[in-house]
Amino acid sequence: METTGGKYNQEGITEIAIYKFDGHEVVDQFISLVNPEREIQPFVTNLTGINSTMLKSAPKFYEVAKRIIEITEDCVLVAHNASFDYRILRTEFKRLGYSYKRKSLCTVELAKTLIPGQPSYSLGKLARSLGIPVSDRHRAQGDALATVKLFKMLLTKDLEKYIVKDAINVESAYSLKKAHKDIIDALPILIGVFYIHDTNGEIIYVGRSNNIKQKINQILTDIDPFSQKIQQLIATVTYDSCGNEMISHLVYHEEIKKNNPIFNKTATPAKPKFALYTSTDSAGYHNLYLDAYSQKKNPITSFNDKRSGNYWLNTFIEKYQLCMDLCGIKATETGCFNYHVNQCNGACIGDEGPNEYNKRFQLFLDDYKLHGRSLAIVDKGREIGEKGIIYLENNAVKGYGFIDLNYQLKNKSILERIISEIEPRNSNLFLIQSYLRKNKNYKIIELE
Image (cartoon, rainbow, N blue to C red; front, side):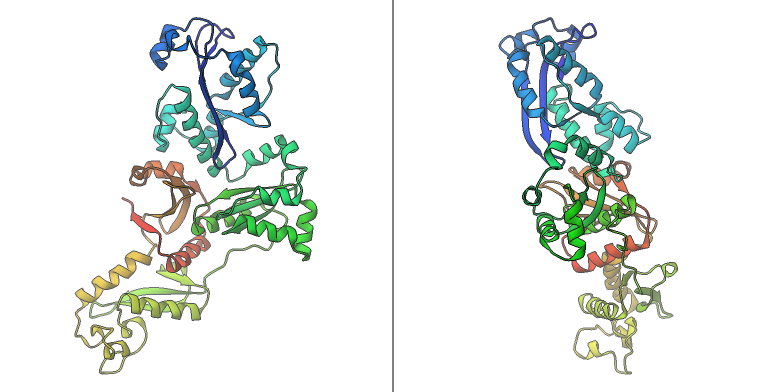
């Protein structure tokens, strides 16, 4: 909101913008200038550009009050410095003889908790430091849209799910009495992580799916013992859209670790057993070989089992025209098998020198070697124009996040602020390596 300024509790609203946000997207909005029926302080006009002439034909507060009540019904008021906005709204309604009550949530306080250490938590400076685009600063619509983007980022960073759990208690009339069919109908067809809550709002199960609606439908219609227990306890389902499968796997394992749901006791991330390693021989050729997994040996990429490792080793040999002999598959004196079928340039018998061969080998390393590099892996985001990113540094997955602007990627300090940090576990690196081998839609950006 924008106000007239003036003495405490004597201010009036000059402009209001409300975006109804369901945790994933804006589902309704109301934007209007308001005739405050009182003078606007000169410093406010200088700040906002709103003057008395602009407001002469604007609706008075009593004319927009019904719309405000309707759009905020059963909602939590989220605002930057929420105590101010809530006080102004309640004051305006009090003048009409109406007691306006809503639960409120302050993005200043949330940001201080979830993104600590910022030099300023004013909306403009915080948005700038996080790479959030802001238009029409100090106007209701621009500030409200920036707050939506900020709140969406804060929801992603709230790994403990305090915001969502608290909101479920507020929305009891909406969610706790729902039938199973209503729960299914309200869910989307998208890639993400879902949370099944009991009547207290507690998370009892975390799941991951490329089609959340289909997966919940399966759980609520199956007759196996696990599904029947869920069916007895379920009150509502919330979800996080992840945009792509890679991020959804990371979020899934992190959420289980953070929330420790009672029905996820046996969910443990897969551990690699074999891996590919590189070495350089006395002639200067880079070699590739498969062996038992060891984090200390800085593997290029890792696998569930030896069979999978051999399959991908042969795939890499074919894709990058690597020499079989230099990849642990011994050649005869007249060259490796691929040399005889014109798929190897002869590094095995010295026909191709190490410099030329190693250039091609380096292409393989650029695509798959994650160790020792500072990287952003960029993939699809949750909506058009957004990108999902995974941030790696010092042989570890540091976190994931979502960006709207390309310059955020090039600014490492912004990237570190907007990601949701996760525990550096070898299993996370294994998940990403597996994903990179099987998918081609990503981009890897080397960070300075």
